Image 1 (cartoon, one colour):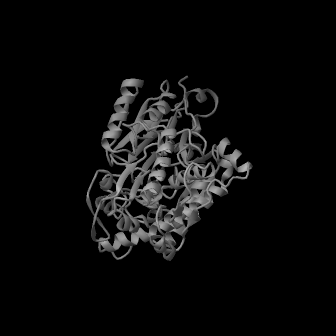
Image 2 (cartoon, rainbow, N blue to C red; image 1 turned 90 degrees about the horizontal axis):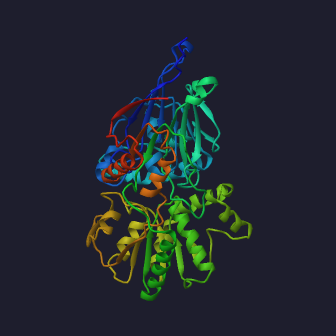
Length: 478
């Protein structure tokens, strides 16, 4: 007697995060079981903003390439805007399904989405649009549809079992594991196939959060490639560079500007400066955390200390506040931010955004870039077309808020603080499933990074690997 085939056909369409590191958005169309009356299920993984250039910003206003009302559920890997930034737009345009993520991701996402509205309003005015792509009521509606899950808490949508595994990227970040629930019992159990969306994989081991969980039995994988063609410097080297940058700014009696993403990178920098201050390794100077979003995000970090790694938990047990130290000044209000300029150097300013495309950092750049006594220290990824990338590439005259600003300040970059896995980390992660992998789809990376990683996966692991183009659809069976 012929054994029944319970496998499901799944179409994966790539509508963002292709040949670029922003706008992550993937559509799964899962065939239903006609005999059970269950029809096709449509699931989105992430729905992020396109960032980094005018062209990217304009893409955010475009209609979705699918009907939002036809989507049954949305799975969110983590709360960076390039993964969540268009969720309220999705809701505004008809999505009524459920949204799933981990608990910290839900809390962070609300902060990020509300905060981004100011930037979106400016974009709308610049493009002569009457209104931004979404408003606060759309954020609130999205949050009402949002259900949080613990790591490894299984749930079912349309005949597939789903769970989140720790991606080790930022607090609450997750990989999405999808298994055909119809093939999880009896004889079929040995043949079940697993689809993994990595989201953004962490640069493990991190000082604060747990390392990326191992996956050793994936059949299909959608993997990021932000640093798919590069190696990071060692954490110890990165920490030493930060220490030297602070010492140098004290000697020069200047201002050290650190543009940092409000979620994760800021907390990582605060954690390290806390260590330097408490161990007397840097002189006592004023350190301004000039970002309301960073301040609020840090409070969320404190609320989920149960998800810290053992080392960070140990420090807490000893009474150490990981994100507070002598000299740190939190500037929530705009007026407080403006007064930073009145404080005599040396001083440090940590402010968003990490790519210098908006936020309070641009005001500080305008004030401090023209002086050679100052230093601009990048610790975050810089997308093509961003002001940060231009400055890092050596531009000597940049446009900031409509003014041409000369660049005399020293420009430095620390690569070791990246929260993304590098080429070795990505290959190592995929290698754990080398015996079971049938296909790997490379996303969320510039073309040279995704192409390089695809070639390495083919050459080193003998795995079929491709970097899909925008709008491309691939079919698999789980």
